[in-house]
Amino acid sequence: SMPALEHCVHPIPPGWLQDQRFDLWFCCGLTAVALLAGWLMVLQPHFYTFVLLADLWVLGYQHVAATFTRLCFDRATFQRNKFLVIQLPTIILATTILFTFGLSPWFIATVYFYWQWFHTARQSWGIGQMYRRKSGGLVAEDPSLLELAYYLLPLWGILHRVAQQPSVFLSLPIFVPSLPPVIVDLVAACAVALFVWWCFMRFVAWWQGRLPLAHTIYTLTHFAMFYVGYILIDDVNVGWVVVNIWHTTQYLVIVWLFNANRFKNGHDAMAPLLSRLSQRDALLRYIFVCLALSTIGYGAITLAGDGFSVGGTLIMLIASQTLNFHHFIVDAIIWRSRRGEIRKSFA
Image (cartoon, rainbow, N blue to C red; front, side):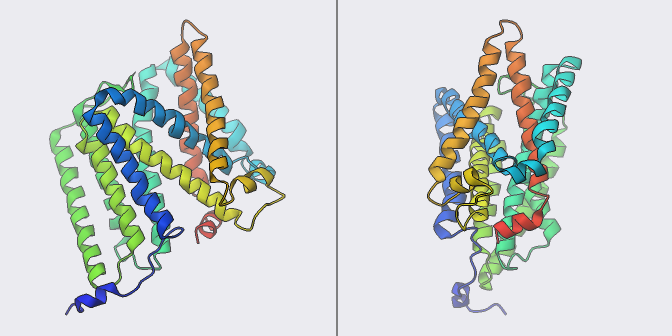
């Protein structure tokens, strides 16, 4: 028989990445900001352009710049990642140019449309794994089913977008294939079924006094954001902005937290700049440096595009998508490699 209700309140390890205040702000605060932005854009559509530009220049471009704090902000890290910093961008630029002129600009925009969706879902799953490891073994669901639950709702979301047949995404023409509605309905049914299963498993865990609190809160925000951004909000661009605000702020915080844990003992002579920017009292300076780097980089791209009366938009598209694709690839590498370093940082 199930234990008495009072057993539900037994103290258990909450599994915070940092502490209760930080993690509630990270999980709930960032989600609330993104949802508030979405609410504003839906109720007042004329705010869309302002919110989009703020998202791109304050968060989106900065989160791409933050990647380089993991790649080249100290000599040893740069030497280890020299290929990712120098050769890889050149390869991506050449490939982007080749496909843009060999096929069509819509091809690059289409690749971005799908790749950024997968990149966002993959990041969220990775953060969920950080919370799982912090739970002390309290996450009891079958790992494969849990991963499937994490990905099925985003899959439902992107299939729902494809079924809407948008011809333009963020002012760029894209290609979406025709999709039988039954496929969307089938994936939706599976996603809802796994979500119900997950909720039941967490109810049982709560009843038994074994609820992994932080992982549960984070997973709920994952489901909520992909449902709101890809399904509930009808406009593909507004929905993307909502999810992107959540995604980019998450990334900025996680990268800073990784660096802060790496340099928790204070200034490191081998990484003088990054170790100073990564101290607990230097968060604003860290944000300012990343924002300055992103503003200079993307500002240069904008100025270069504006300087050409013919082909300026194409130049900006190629340059910005090269940075985006580089970010996607590098992220898939650096958060997988040296897992011991990553796990130690978030231990």
